[in-house]
Image 1: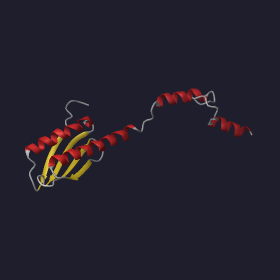
Image 2: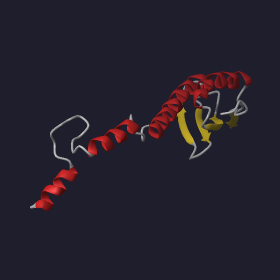
Image 3: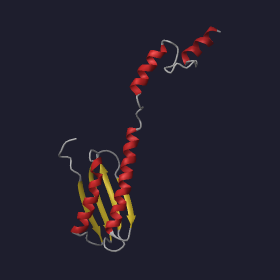
Image 4: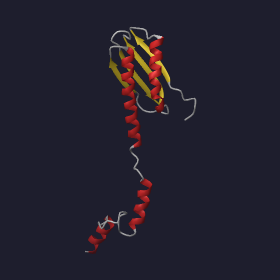
Length: 142
């Protein structure tokens, strides 16, 4: 899209403060999600008890659709962020594949080949199988 489409990262701490060092580490790891930047608007990092057995939640807001959420508890904030970034990357990749897979590979060629083969009564591959039109004609003739 355009160069001004930056992803905003928000940090929220529950019952604890997220230090600048923790924020810098999380921002560095969340930069991996930049390849999906055309869809992302905002990323929220919500940490509960950030310094001891943190429960971290990663919420990714998209331009369209419901936000994606990944949540986990770990022994340290940095290890939990690393795990959550991997989880979120997998979710985004799956969503992208789902959007992309609805198209038929070489669909234009298949459609043009089907039109050209319809007049001959044979399929594109030259198989001797009966087409739908041939079956209808055969049943109508008797």
